[in-house]
Length: 304
Length: 233
Image 1 (tube, rainbow over the protein chains, first blue to last red):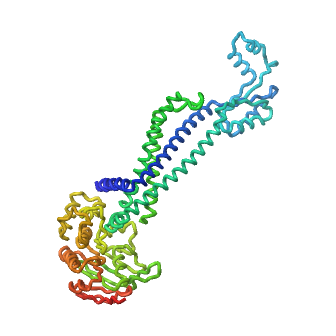
Image 2: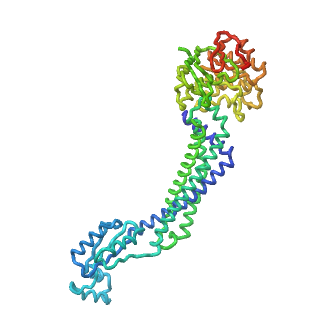
Image 3: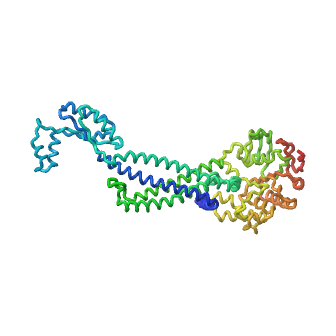
């Protein structure tokens, strides 16, 4: 009960203080709003890109064709060399010999087609098809390097992998993600700095009050509490607009783009509950940034 | 055991000024003690040691069984809740009413509103300001403001009341009234009072214990004494 009473009274102090330093509070709130809006855009974009990249990685393979005249020993040697490459999913490595390829091709072809007829004529001695390894990669970004590593293996005749525009864009996406992250960190620092300044002014404005509080035996915790609550409120108020923009904006964007981003390959994540989760993260970031900013200022300036 | 026990106490500030040197003072519970001396003799430093605004450089300061010299910063509030402090400049909050100013400390320790109310009204009655609860400090005279300050100091029924030149900003007539209020608190509630003052007339009229400091050294300590400090320094 006692703790609740102290907390309730300090909430009132914090609200009063926000209005007392109104212009600075507004500056902190605006800064938090801008930061969180950018954070929101970055989260929405990066989670969508991640989701898409994961999907793509799950399906992407490299086909390594082996020389027609490769012996079984040589094929085993190639296999062990492939398994040494870091970026490949070793448990998903598939080898298809000439006969398997011939049968698969026949199964896929129309019985009246010329391909079917040709395949039908092939036997062990005249089978001109190349055996192949189907290699799944772990990280799409290193696709080209992995292909080069495969190419350099002796008796590998050719390497094939799809190189669509989307796949080429993945490294660009990653760069964009990193740059956005740097901007976010920078903006969060600016926001913390502004909140620190607001709290610093509050401390100066309430210097006498704090002095009297200390003289009449108020604990350090209770002295600090209203400032930390004020920072928390500034952070949460600053997150209101980004939260609304995230939920509303993402739903609209999803509808307008019909669930696809940039191209028909990149499927967007469904707005609900995704946008609600992102909103929750924004409120938490706002609250933490506000509290952290005010707590560090209180510690530095009150020396208690 | 003495209520206040100061032993071999030194206070040297960072700039090298020795404010107190080898001070030994013992004060019983319920005593009324004047601390006198010229400006800069160490009076304020002495009371600051008692409410732990300053720490002694050397020696021991015991207040009500608490070793103040070894008290951590985070624990100071526990000592202060047992003390009442009255200042020359009142230190009232201008935007709070008389009632709110007196209730200020109690508000921050989370007492129930009903308990705060009874304590505040009792304190205001003692200082004779029960009818001014809704006034703001700027609507009061200097003497009344000091009474509010005293009410705030005694509202939590402290064992020790420290008054740092409480009449310094008041005219002689008002000063006498304030001292009378403080004397009554000492006699009626049994609160130990330590009053720093320059007011010769007040010291001489009350015939209480007088401790005189000179350049941080105790020069006289007399029961039912009179003002002996040399103000020419």
